[in-house]
Length: 335
Ligand code: TXA
Ligand code: MG
Image (tube, rainbow, N blue to C red; front, side):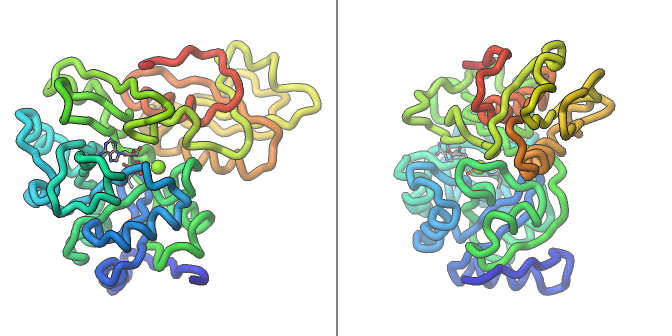
């Protein structure tokens, strides 16, 4: 396929060109407010098959369907759940994905054979105009190779997928930086399948106390829940800050990912600070880019300090835990 062109989404014809590719069954990487997506026409099974191929993603891992307008949601899923109208009016467009029963318009390759479908209405002008001009819903996973760190800007996408997509639409850096929250409305209780850009505290005033998925790692409902996912190639360990002094020395070359400025980072060869002011939103925006920078240095090991587990911190810690391959001294929450 060669190297895909990267087009500035603000260029007059860029979105139109991208939409033409989607309509013809091609693949376009595009920005959303959470992370970049790798999109194809959700109603074209051959096009959707190319997504799985490009990402080297197992076909048992279902995709999210992106729509431009809540008004068309019922064409793709059954939104008769009593909570659906309120959740949609409060959180769409935005980083909330709802899992509902699918309609026959959605080919089974999109949902990996499930009777349910994950649908979201992204809050990004480029994503919305691409979907609108494509005149279809767009199925899209994050635009990274399977199991790797999600992309939050166009160069991240190009690093892993330049020769596997038809076009990369560059809309700058993502404003949320972490994937959408996935909320399953098909069970007896609304259940969070993946922590993400909408914190549970924001949902609970409308949903009541939420359940958290406890699916078996071997047969995950949402493979974002695989224990090892969102991975760096460099082994990563989570350690509380008071234990850092034990780790940052010796002959190993170790990188440090910190929430706020560390008191002492002696011995670490590279340090990434997620938010000097301790702002979880800023930390979420910077997380994946910081992991990629550290991962590109060819170090022996990475150490990450935990962030407070509230608001977006829940999703950040979820990603760090799934990234961690080395024993960590922090207990898992929500398991
Ligand atoms: O923010 C996001 O959600 C980004 C942007 C591009 O929209 N997309 C994203 O897609 O993170 P992906 O494929 O990396 O993660 C989608 C997750 C997977 O873990 C998948 O298993 C889950 O959604 N999923 C999709 N359909 C599902 C369904 N019917 N039931 C349960 N989980 C589902
Ligand atoms: Mg992903």
